[in-house]
Image (cartoon, rainbow, N blue to C red; front, side, top):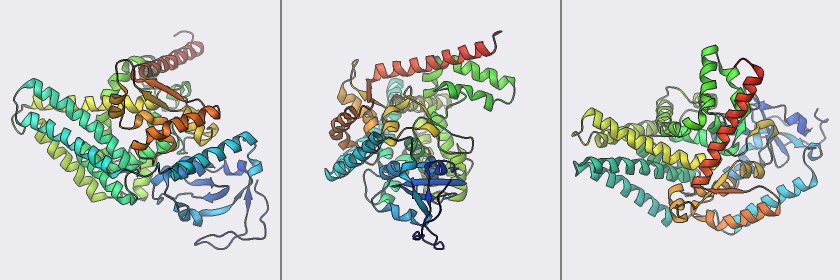
Length: 482
């Protein structure tokens, strides 16, 4: 229950003056859906229900009924908190947060001070020459892949070109990622426009589709939704019925099935997911292309979150998104057809080699970043720092992969833990902050995990196998005749 209002009034913008109310943590936790969403920022309570006009989109609802202080700092420029003043409804009673002890309060204070320290060290300032170099080298990969098809009739040259194109798509993904995390430009619109170039035009991905999905992932990595109507789960682990990352997710097939046939398919998929994992990665880009096309051209959305956001807010750049994807397929058609020389079968082979290799190259990196790490229920999530660190894995050199190759191939996401803690930090500064963050985690006893590309994938496959085994044991216990 909330306490009685005090005499002084709250500073509401655009709303009638109201007496200041103090709320308990239990009261805040009741408001967890987009239609009834309360959030806490620095012990102030805000009612952001139905705020689909939020500049960052529906990601605001990932912290409905929770404290958004640290994820707000991770995503926003200084001064952004002025936008939420109009939603202010009262103060949180800190003493009501009985799930936190003094050490936890000290820990949160310490990592907020660390962020301030890194800002003062200049770790959030980008090097424009670094990104100019990355853009130039990316375009040189694209030009080389085009030239290998245009000037040669050799099948092996064409095979190499298609694989190079797949690698180009992957590297474009990292560049778009940096621009859309606002690591490069202070003026955010420039970053978004660069995202349209590197996303829509060069990759065929909708900038807004990616932002909706990826921002939600960053806010709540490896979380399961608290309820069917809340938006506090990670869209990146919403992989049912093909893959289950926890026994709870595997059990969810009972909610998905319409009849026994659906149930049988899901049981089969979970049983053999350790074998289907890599084939599924090969097809990932095809799924992303499909969802991007639907988003840009208003033909649907991948999630309820994205659907409502598009209905209420629309695309940020409706014309540019459509034009970018259209011209992506124009140049892709020219290349895949060998500029008119290839047969249909040959053209399709080129397209699928480039597309599937890109899916594998991309998914290998972000799959290593989170797959097989801790998963949580949204209602029992840990604090911001522990959530980001315990659900994330860094990638190191080893097993024949030099660190220099890993640094280039992973596009900064070899420091996935560090990036998740500070997503607006330019990738070229992550290595400099890595030892500081690792030391801080050791000081406070927070698990910090790293693995090379071989060991990391083994960990992912073992995790999938363990979920399969636990699920099958549960099914046998429930239905002994199996």
